[in-house]
Every structure is written in structure tokens, then in C-alpha cells.
Amino acid sequence: MSQSNDRPNTGPLSPEFLPFDLDSIVAHSGHVVVFSDADARLPRAARRADKLTRGAVSRAVGSADFAALEPGGALVLNWPAGMQAQSLQIVRLGRRADKAALRKAGLTVGKSLSKAPALICADAMPLPDMLQAIALRAYQYQAQKSDPKPDFGALSVMMRDTDKAAECADALALARAVHLTRDLVNAPANVLTTTSFADQISDMQALGLKVEILDEDELARLGMRALLAVGQGSESPSKLAILHWQGAEGAPLAVVGKGVMFDTGGVSIKPAAGMEDMTMDMGGAAVTVGLMQALATRKARANVVGLVGLVENMPDGRAQRPGDVVRSMKGDMIEVINTDAEGRMVLADVLWYAQDRFAPRAVIDLATLTGAIIIALGHDKAGVFSNNDALANAFLKAADQVGEGAWRMPLGAGYDKLISSRIADVKNSGGRPAGSITAAQFLQRFIKPETPWIHLDIAGVALTKSDSAHAPGGASGWGVLGLDALIRAEFEDG
Image 1 (cartoon, rainbow, N blue to C red):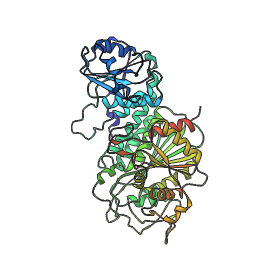
Image 2: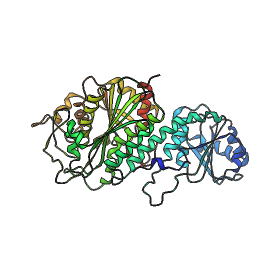
Image 3: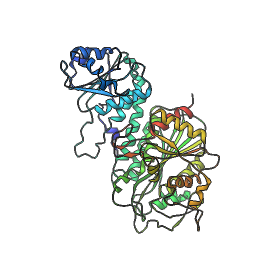
Image 4: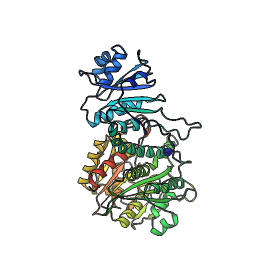
């Protein structure tokens, strides 16, 4: 299982807050971070470092290289003379830096952290956005190492008013939720199974969440035969996990995540090359679970229910076949054209169940649904499909505020003919043309007309080979920040 709760109590998720003391800069033996801006008077921590290094800081800040840095970028002086530090990082940041610059600075610092203890000389600088970004960028996944080491040395933050340290708690709790999401996505499929994931979700009741786990018998009773058809070739039992945070009255927001723990493609088997990455096909479920942890931890004044359909798509003698016809919980008959178009079948039943049981104010689903969205948008932006302009625009604004890339994609009745079935009500695949759109169009069949809905296709952003905006290569945790920001703005009381 994921090891997110077993991290040592040091490093970027649990910094120590210290009173501002210039003498600490002299004696610190690890990594020291100071801030300055080009063409500006050095702040007092940078001035002390400049005096210790006999002008090295002022020369660096006055250089063309420093002037060419974007706000939040940095220069590093290794083994600076006159200091005990192994390295001195000078981050370009003005006194009135905006949130984007503070996040950029945090990402820069987070990338530079190592096992050496780090000292950030923050003084009166706003900290929550920066510290959150440090924690997000410094993430490492070590749970599967034979001898896992502590990720980082201790992180200390010197600040003028240590009473303001409490302001960072919310930001760091959200970073922990992103780390949980990444741990889940990074975990191999023989470790994180439908059962072990459900067990981990059950443990989250300790946070104040109400949790239900529905097994295959209950899913069959409810008529979720589209979901069950996907998992019928696997030894891992299919499940539906429901996490409810009721921090307010009224109808809830429903967040639905695709949880395909491993996707071989089924009988329509995927190519072998790259199939190892299909451990990430439960990315939508991981974001949903991370979000629910964040809401519970900060005691959000919102009513949110998270639902994740947990299945494994494997080929064996019991697996569904191309050409099969399956009845969904809604009652629509689905012709299975491609068993690798499985995520939409899982979501179809869970989306209908969420509306049928909870009558939500709105529904948002997340899924690593299509390779086509990667062709359309690459790895920088998720695809946003919606039947409601106000909700879509609110999410796009929230995602932009936290630096998560997202782009609105079209829906339209004209795409329905691509998934029209000769023998059933609908096909589960329309082929390559407009592949991400026809997948969203399929899902829209299972959204009631009066329900505001967003579908987020996160196939391109959930896991990346290279560094992403907030993370090193690997699982990104994309979506936790944006959805939390949306809930704060649109679904929270008070």
C-alpha cells in the first residue's frame, strides 16, 4: 500500500519555524536560502550573507545572469567562503511578489533540497504558497526501495513573526493530500490492489469521513453490470468506495474517480511497450481520495461525496469480449467495441449511482480516459468537458489560480453518430476520430439533463516522464489543488 503516512517528521512537509536570527546564517552547515531582487537593496538576510562572503551575494545579484532570471528563479553559490554552509541559494523575489512568483520560488527551492538540512531565511515574506510549492516539488517516492531513506534533511524556516506559522498549516495539509495522490498513482498494481486500496480508504474514517465499500454482490444488486463487466476477467474483486465529508447542509458536490488499478486493455490488449505505466489508470480515483483527505483535514465547510469505482481490466476466459452487449445501471445497452475503452463503462455506472442516490448540486468526474487527449493537449493541460458554462469557467479559473493546466474541449450532438450502435443503444468506442470527445459524449449519456457536470480527462497530466509544473517526473497529483480551490470558491459555506 501507499506509504504516505509513514514519512519521517522532517523535510518539506513538516518544517520547523524559528525566530529570525541572523547569526543562524553563519553557523548553518547545510543549504541556506536567501531572497533578493535585481536592482533592489539587499534584504537583511542577504546582506548578512553578503558580508560573510565578502560581497559575493551583491556581485551575484548585480550580475546579468541574475537579472535574466524570472521571478522565483535562483543562482546557487556552492561552498561559499566565510560560511559553514554547503550551498547558498539566492532566489530572485521582490518584496511584493504575487502568488505565481511565490509558487515559482517554492518550486525552485524544492528542487534544490537534498539530505542536507536546509534553512530558509524568509523574514516577513508570505509563506503559505511558497512552502506548499516547496513540498510539492521536493516529493520523492521511495516506498518500493529495499532500503528506503528519509527523503530530505530537516527544513527550518526563519520568520519575523513565528505566530504566523499557523497560516502555513492549511497549505501544507493540501500538499500532504497531493503527496497521497502521487503515492497511490506511483504504487505498483501488485501492491495497490482493489482490496488494499479499499482498505486504505476505509482507514480514512479516522479523519471524520464516512466511508462505505460496496462489494460485487451489492454492485450486481444495484445493476452496475457495465462496471462489473470490466473487472470480470480479474482475480481482484471489483468494488465501489464512497467517501462522504459533510461539513455543510444541502445537496452535495459529487466527485467521481476512475479506479482501474491496472489496465491491460483486456481482450483488446495493449502493446507491451509502455504497459507498465498502466498502474496509473486509477489516477482519477487517487485524485478523488486525495481531495477528500484535504477536505477532511481542513474541516471544509462543504458537503462533498467522493465515489471511486475500483476494478482491474485483465484478459482471461471470463473477460468481456469485443461484440458483447452489457446493460448499464441506467438501463442503456452498451455494445463493447473495444475492451480497452473500459474506464467510461466504470464511470457510466458510478455517475448514474451518484446522481440516483445523492441528488448532487453538481458532478465532476476525473479519469485517465483517453490517449487522444494527449494527442490534443500534450502533458501540460487536462481536457475539460462540461454541460454547464458557469461551472466549467469556475473550474478553469480555480485551476489557473493554483497553476494547474486545463483547457475546455467541445461537446455536441454531432459526435453522437460516431458512437451510435447498430445492435444496442450506444457503442463504447467511436474509434480514433475525436476520441476524447466521443468518450466524453458517451459519459454525458449518464448525466441527467438538470445536473451540472464536468468531465476531466487527465490522461496526459496524471503521470509524466519529465518534470511537470509542481512535481518531478512521475505522478503529478494534478487536480487536488484545482478542485480544492473550486470548492473553496463555489461550494463552501461562509
